[in-house]
Image 1 (tube, rainbow, N blue to C red):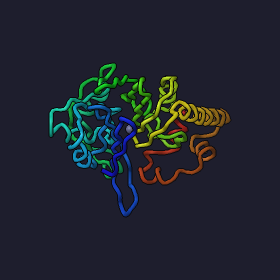
Image 2: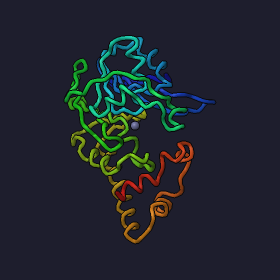
Image 3: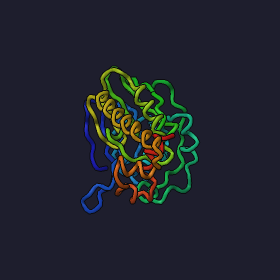
Image 4: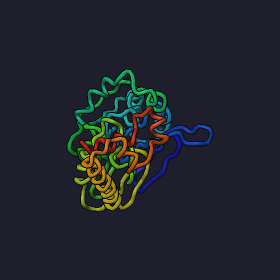
Length: 263
Ligand SMILES: [Zn+2]
């Protein structure tokens, strides 16, 4: 593990790899009471297992089925029969994960082993805390967030990630993500991201993210109405594709975001 930090009663476990002094990637798992939220990727499963030796994990909740969130679960369950919960749409992918992934995903995160999970209840008890399960599709259909209203914690998986996200994968649905963001609680909360960021004053950050995407979507649709094609709109509004596009073989791309705005 790269780092463990405390945020009041929440423990953040930052998982990832350092190569030549640079962090190649980061994923985060969070411990609340005896509940672990997400488990990192297959390549950091050993890091997570070592970190959990001294921590009281008795249950696991997953924000969605992607390999950088479920990847440590099989190893955790190999050591002890710990129950895990996920959205019903995620269960098949967790029990029977794909044998192959996009090349960069296999290299960076690894292919997850099969693990067991049950459908999430509406609310999870974690010691003295109660986490409400919010269905937040868009990044993928089985995405959920976990909300502790009394403490003002919101665990967002890959729903938020940042205020000015410019790349999407082809299957992501930006309008559904925006709808999920609009349905988030109105009261104050701190965001705990799947990538490890902790954002205080979450509602203000979500409002800025929505305003950025709403403006971008409006401009994209106006240009499309004038007859502009997706690639030309992308370059005009967001500039050329960059490192992320290259590193992911075109899977994570600005043009996917623009295409998603155009429906
Ligand atoms: Zn994801």
